Figure 1 (tube, rainbow, N blue to C red):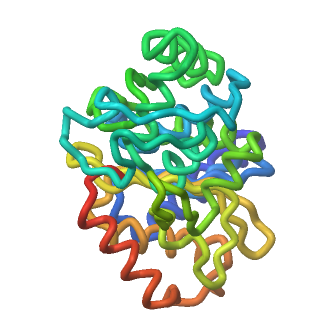
Figure 2 (cartoon, rainbow, N blue to C red):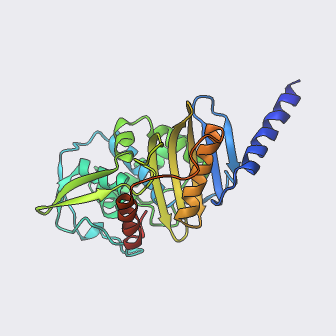
Figure 3 (cartoon, helix red, strand yellow):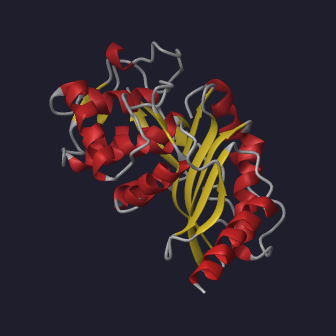
Length: 288
């Protein structure tokens, strides 16, 4: 009897993965309450994870219990010299650690993430050691993270480990709040600057998102972690190495339809200005 149940479960998993068209190269969808795998595709393949890294950066910073109101000045050491990505956080700006966390998570700003690691007690080396300890604590045996932004292709993981990371990150109220904010206005050297969430699904009609993080580098492709609730079912999804924004978006929509039993809307609706703002941001920055 047990063998029959196991076989039926494996068949249901395979059928789900086959029935849902997926453009991402690696996918894992897990029901939060039961841990049941709903969709699986190359879930153990180890690949670069780009800015999904910043969820780990945020957890390590928050674990340190540092003063979120402490003012931090951005300096030249925070500038990306690996991929030369741009940032709307200028060198010389002084903002709070909490605002840096907001920008690193919501807008995926690399300079903000670098500043968080630089000002960690003991500096970047101590930050990296804390990250490695956190990885071990969470049992992420296929994960390697050596820097805070995700720009390095040496920051690697698989979908199975990233579901664990998402579950851990969801235990932090600050991370849930920040990653589901649609926008924030921050004073940058006397000028009020508006920043947007890099995930266009956040704030979109009909989407109930409890956690979100995008990622992009040339090596990693388009990546996404989300915790969503649909038709009373809460699930965590990990999408890795989608070929473009549209593929990543369509995968998320198809997974939502699966959760809803095909009752989800066929077309995601968002305001035109919102779409334009995010697309412009994506064209100007290679840091999601």
